Length: 586
Image 1 (cartoon, one colour):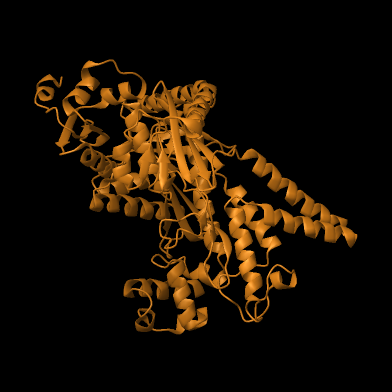
Image 2 (cartoon, one colour):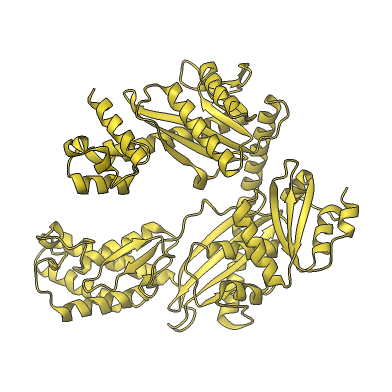
């Protein structure tokens, strides 16, 4: 099929892009030798996910580069731009939590996730693979040491001061020597030296016991035991100057089992595991994973990788020291990571492949119902309201029945909207008009919650935009359980309630309902005044706060002119706000 085109490909480094029948890039790769790599897809034996990729390739393109590093940079750039479905998808992964011990005059100890924008990286400790563990450490240290708890100093003592967990920084002249001692001990603890904290807890336990406060003494004793257990589980690997991340993997049947060891101050501070379904070469997929990993995480001074990975190219790309351990403790630890990766994949491979098979069966069943059309990307909508007012909508995105949470979207509906159909028309129009304008990726299928009426309303909007996207509604029975698919031609198709397709459609419906309801609750729970303002499209948290800061009350906002409101918000949003407040009163 591609014999003639392959004969023209040069034996040079570069990046290649695979396209499907719609011209959409479905995979981006790189190679030292483009001809050899591209030829392997169409003449060699391929299995699993790579076989599925090849079955969808209708065309390919390539870009020649001067070096392998340039091809890697180009590959990652194109992956970010096109988000191909057969590349490693890490978009839903959250960044790891860190503990931040601020360098303020009166420091604060807290858990943070977004570390990329932090100017001072030296006061960050972690990463903690478990956010619960990070919070427990912060809670414990905040109870032991009377640090500042509030982001901004208040005018009077807070509850923490009266509980003995704050020195009253807002009003008292704090003993700076005591503060320096606390800072030294906490920093030592976060660096792995728990001696000072254990001594402090032991003294407090003994003091509480002497005062016959046995409940408090038991609390301190439990804290001491927790710390000792944590320290026991941290394997000492080298001296306290060693701070690095160690990666290794094991691959089988297009699955990559990855182990990451976080070594801080010479101890195994934490570890993480990840199993991903990859396409093509396992070493390339592993390299891509590491690069995408550090788009979210702090890059350490040292990173260790196995010997089949090009450490030099990774080092150049990440601008840090990447090396391969050859012997000693680090080589032993690298082998341990590989063994752990294999054990985990062996344990979970049967379950993973079975789930993959079930998912693909459901995709094929849905495709058959729709007339053998491709069904990969699904977008689903649901509305939420309070007694017919304050409408919001949620949209969730699934690919092959797997959620892409980073692509979920929330919508505040026009304040004059009073019914579900109008709300749905508005959100469908806004979503796909924007995709048209931005040339975004269109879904293969749109799902709306409801029967014939809802499907007709959604189709009306799609027709007005001249869009031909598969559309179905999910209709519930008398037990409020999804039982019927309503096609865009208003044909009713009964669902087998014991089948895989029913399970996944129900899962999607539950997810979009949860997402929309959660958004509505978030707005309502922010406070009476701000939640009222934030129901207006174009007004979010920041603008509502600015309005309340300037006008101080809803009454004064109502009385303000369009010109006065436009000093804070855009004039069109100011008009919307005035109309909304007037209609609300009526």
